[in-house]
Length: 449
Image 1: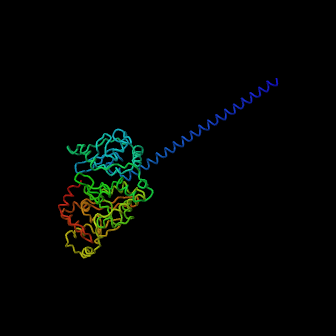
Image 2: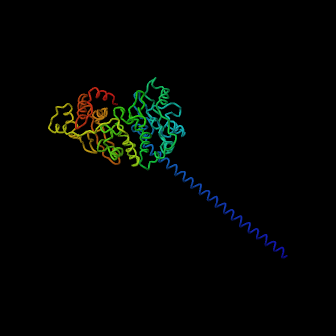
Image 3: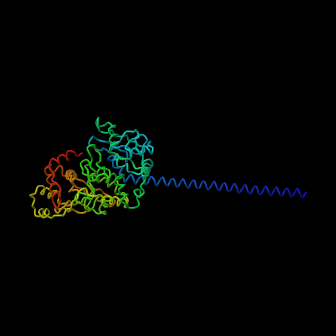
């Protein structure tokens, strides 16, 4: 009997022990499962946060690249395309780059997106018109391409808007010559990441180079083009023609090199930053296409990136060795005395002096100075003529909200009068630019939209 009770107690103890062990094991398993679930949730949250951060970075990069400027029609929806871009061979209409699957890029893989952005080839395989600055975008680093792809696929609202057919006549509308153009003039794409160029938190020359030569595609406007519409240089290392200035429609995009007469040689770094941020500084104000660049792009850039760009531009050697211009008060004294025997002087006094002053110094931040201005002294007078003909308005930005406008004088003044007043301005107050004739004014007037 005692043995039976002993065995029974022993078995009961074993059962209890087994139950306790099983419970502990179950508890451990449950704890492990809970821990795994928590880790999975944490990883999921981290991945979502990473995705949000990637999309946010892509949004900033799209601002730097000013994608909205070309891919948004006037009064159109963002990135839906349809903007008419005038080229020497006809009108190219920008495409819809929203994630709409039928009319946009909604079916694009990352590879499709990369090929269009940096290689200049569409999803269908044909070469894009170089109105799309893919030769500059070839410098964009893969990590930034991924951020841009994330933004356009997940941060942009899809818009159903079919593309407008290009206004280019046959045979210029044939695409296969563009493939030869791309092979001849487009560089190879960036294969890896340059850590210094990718660091947007620190001001550096390398970061500035990356933004100017790549995503900012400054050379697309500020570098002259050859007979086949190719940029004469894509980097400073290839030629001093880079950023020496170029004509875009009826405007001359200024020389951005360190030239002291018609470039940025007399601008400080802070003045370059102020121009990009506010659209105006002590030397000039944004006009033409640069007005939209400031409105849509540069005013949103970080201080470190703006300073990096300014530092890089200041590092560009001048294209021509020139002494700085010296102010002369001869024209101011003559105008004050009512001496207007020089052609264009009376026109200036009647139409321009009230804002730009008879001494040519204007009012800083309000009406740009004409004396010693790089725009006035540009080798190509297209911008100054266009400003007189069509007028312009400053961009209203977060840091300079007031919009000041210059009226158009094209209907009031004939071609000879415009030529005379522009020539007067380009030779007064120490300016030393060449004269302009009526034929030049007539050509610019006729080429204007």
